[in-house]
Image (tube, rainbow, N blue to C red):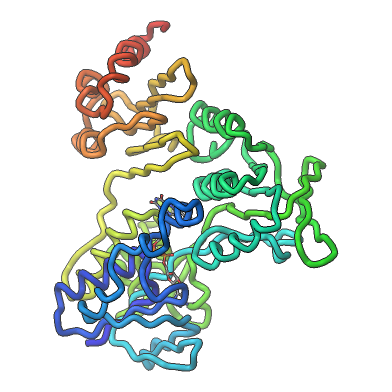
Length: 423
Ligand SMILES: Cc1cc2nc3c(=O)[nH]c(=O)nc-3n(C[C@H](O)[C@H](O)[C@H](O)COP(=O)(O)OP(=O)(O)OC[C@H]3O[C@@H](n4cnc5c(N)ncnc54)[C@H](O)[C@@H]3O)c2cc1C
């Protein structure tokens, strides 16, 4: 049996390794155009900032893959022929398969802005972007980043560390307020300014201005401003990378359409990770999950399914953790989702840099949103799974907290808020 995997990100490598465990005698080949070896994409910023070498972002030594008998091919797949079960590589080679896994990840969104192809304009997704960034910063004193999300803030921090003055253009009223509740979005917005970034809210990019030599020299905005800059970072989200499937019958929507066993519409072709779009029963909205841990989990599930087992992807309790500059952020469960009957308790420390939000209904707690405070993942997820009520959670909050010192100071305030008292 020959299994081909396109993509060596977390979804692809997890699938390859699990499949090797389950099927010692199958041929497994993993193809990626970006790099021969898997590396940790979230670590890109640390490489740029000098905290880690590129070598250190690779969780496995280079010789590991040969030991596992997983063939690595560094090339771009240009087309797929499902009828003859072949993939065509850019180098001219063709590779046959019996089962094919698409784990092609995402690409940065580009919305056709005038000037988006000028020199000095780039996204932040992979190693090529990193290489471009090393070049671009050489001639940059001022940069503009379009988009206020997690990748934008990382790019901002990277540029800031290189001594570059950065201005964010953010379409929303506050930084990331399409995801964060407004108090937390206000906290992040204050922090962004406190760290010396420019922040233009409710502002859209109108045009990237050409310096006459094919490089950017400024941007203009829909609020009538012109901001001088020698680098423009476009970080307005990512979309599944599915251009490869254009000339095939493999069904796509925003991503590769798959059932909950991660099977595509075409027999023996599967998809996992950022590029997969899980089809839900009508009206519920399909699911695309573009974070590390869901990619890993989908990689595990799809390997079992490819190996012939009956398995479905069960969406667990959502969680995400990240950093906005030096502010830690964690979310568990459903926060800011507009759930019917949802209410919340919100506590914010006097310094304006720590907060806790507990979202709940009459019967149970729905989610936690934490800024500058860490709660234990296993405890929060257990409470959410067990559908614990607000009173239970408040009584047992100590169990979730990592930091007993800080906990003592806010526990009383949080309980007072819960009981409707002023603090
Ligand atoms: C800068 C940055 C920071 C992030 N930080 C976090 C974080 O802190 N926490 C978190 O949970 N998530 C984070 N993410 C998201 C996370 O990295 C992704 O969800 C995850 O990497 C997706 O894994 P994947 O295996 O689906 O795809 P990818 O990692 O994108 O891998 C897909 C691979 O497929 C290859 N490929 C695509 N098309 C072809 C083709 N035609 N031919 C050959 N090869 C092809 C690409 O070269 C690529 O290497 C971050 C993302 C970025 C960009």
